[in-house]
Length: 101
Image (cartoon, rainbow, N blue to C red; front, side, top):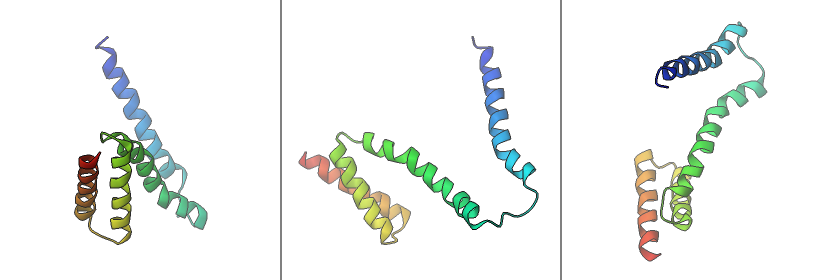
């Protein structure tokens, strides 16, 4: 079974490379469509949010404390606080809510 792991890694590397290489190889000129440009601009943020949000809900002892931390983080980020400040405020909010639950 261990000999197949190298094949799996090779296939995964090839697929990852193709996904990144094909758009560059197929598009020779600059993308001028405002819709496609905005779509490509927001895709990384949407993927990050889709991967992060479920982890936020399951990372604490209760969903209530997770939502409290998430809410505090959203408010702090909206007020353009630094990443460290947002993280510390969210952790503090989770800690305080966990103490009361």
